[in-house]
Length: 286
Figure 1 (cartoon, one colour):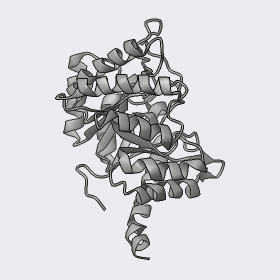
Figure 2: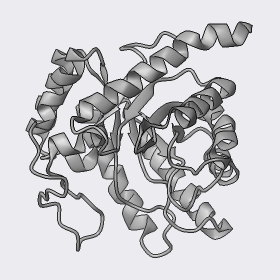
Figure 3: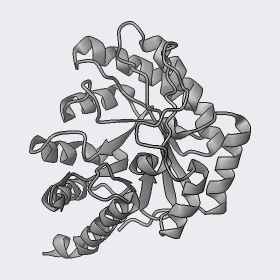
Figure 4: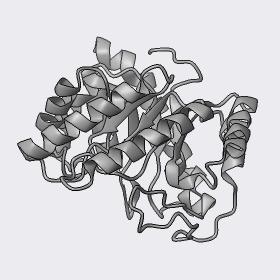
């Protein structure tokens, strides 16, 4: 198994959205307000306390959704960066949660807004910044538009220490065909964050085996039913990652009401992947 700085597991703040409570809907749309809202309840913890909570559970990588940042002031960003450093938590990815580079009317506005997050990510010490590739249907026109704008964004990030990545997410990228087309056109300027839960089974398994060979990071989202974690689905997704030769970190995405305490779901998924990885040498020599 590949040895990674700060281990092989990260947690996204999306996995703790009930714990964190308030969200701040930063957007390129001037009609949207970033005033705090509490769609998941009032929360019980502050974002700045998350790095220490992660470290206490043996996890030393973090991803932060842009809407979980209570402030974009430099003083707060430095304070949050210091909190990560104090807990030896690597800031893996800032997840920029709005914008659409494929939209005919607003793509240029949106991608320029996305570019403003590069400095924020750099101030926080993020290795990467995940942006939305596009929400429009996967027509040649929309894909070409997104590729042009994302290529420009990747160029803006050069020299910042922050690498832009996209995800197999939303209508623009419904299959490996579109995902690979886009990455080929971007020619390395923008990387891939592969997500295990964004495509539907059963087609998603072969799709993941295809694209995860190109992934730098992975959102390891598990599905849940009335009986709990869907172990068969999760195992097949991990097998596809292994088949593709993926050796990067797994970001634990817990998005279910099954466990009232979100940490229980996060740590269950971590234990599942650890067991899977521990069995990997035996599978390869069988």
